[in-house]
Image (cartoon, rainbow, N blue to C red; front, side, top):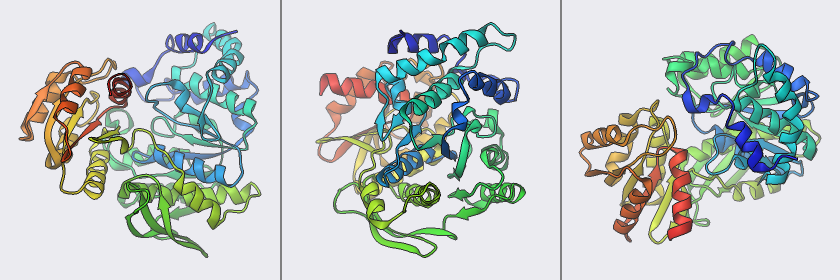
Amino acid sequence: MSSYNDAIQKLDELVNYEHTLDQPYNADNYDLDRFRRFLADLGSPEKKIPALHIAGTKGKGSTCLIAESIIAAHGLKVGAYLSPHIESYRERIRINKKDISSGDFAAAFEQILPALDKAGKQAEGAPTHFEVLTALAFVAFRNAKVDVLVLEVGLGGRLDATNVCNPIASVITQIGLEHTAILGETIEAIAKEKAGIIRKGVPVFLSTTGDAGKVVESACMEKDAKSHCLGTDFSAGGVGKSEEPACGMRFDFKIGGFEINDCVLSVPGLHQVDNAAVAAAASQTVINSLGGNFNETMLREALKDVAIPGRVEVVREDPVIILDGAHTSDSAAALADALELHFPNRKHIFVVALLKDKSVKGVLEKFAPLAERFIVTETAHPRCLPVGETAAAARLTGVPSVAEPKPEEAFARAFSLAGDDCGVVVTGSFSLLAVARKFLRENL
């Protein structure tokens, strides 16, 4: 019987595009037909459970976790599949709002081993790291007898391994310029890849607008998939900070004849209100189509009970220490807005490490007006940008900056400088958040 560590060791031997991103984005490298054949050897678990499928550039992970909370509150057993993780692969596979146990992860891996060994001996080769994780998730969800899945797309949409699912509703969140070397250099090209999750006759819920929204709505028309747009078909109004919890939000939600006022969302940031609205709209369709009764009481309870690790996550209050995986210009802007809203008139020490394919200049420029100083570092992630390159970009912002190659030393310096009027924000890469969590456990 494989242990959890055995499973991780075997997974790490597989081709991992998350670590390289240098493979051409085509059906040869991201081969869904090959992946379906692999799943067929496992009994095609992806076909057994209806899914809410979520793509986008910004907010898709948060939207998944909010939808998970709403659907679970209405009495359905929900399995959620997310990426990336912060510290453990177990975070990617959730059953009823809890990370999968090490034992259940290992048991699911043991079930896929024969198919993995068989595939490795065939000419087309073994599936990729992400494909095997996705297959493992489908098997684990089947083992747990969940009622419905909430699936976050890993990359793009059209060729993503999650796009073999059986959706009863789809979501496309905000779309921006990310992974341009892979998905395309324009918003329209990227939107077309995201719209690849749209299925014939399956309703689509959108928070993306502008040129990207036009591309997605055109794809909906081609697939005879009814589109539901934020601001037109459903809305979030009356937005403001909540008093309890202190770092939460309040808003009014309306879709069709369903309207509730003064909802409390337990996570900070204006951007999370849009994510909550699209999650609620899509969840209504999912819950009602599976025989449930989408209702105000359960929605209110669910929104108050959302936890989103690594997204404006306040891990300490004295001094304030915040973890956020912002790694694009858009996500950096959302983080900056949340900091201004919830911590007004305050500067922050930003500890930053970024990956090579990110817009370092764009991210740092969003943080600069709120930065007391930048402390830049690097992690062991294969795609992490060398600290010297990040430091050079930080100096161009005009903010006092220092380079600390070892993240533990960067944290120690930042925390020693923090005080009542100056917090610490650790950001730029989920790999940096993982090191920060370990450091905080061991030192503070």
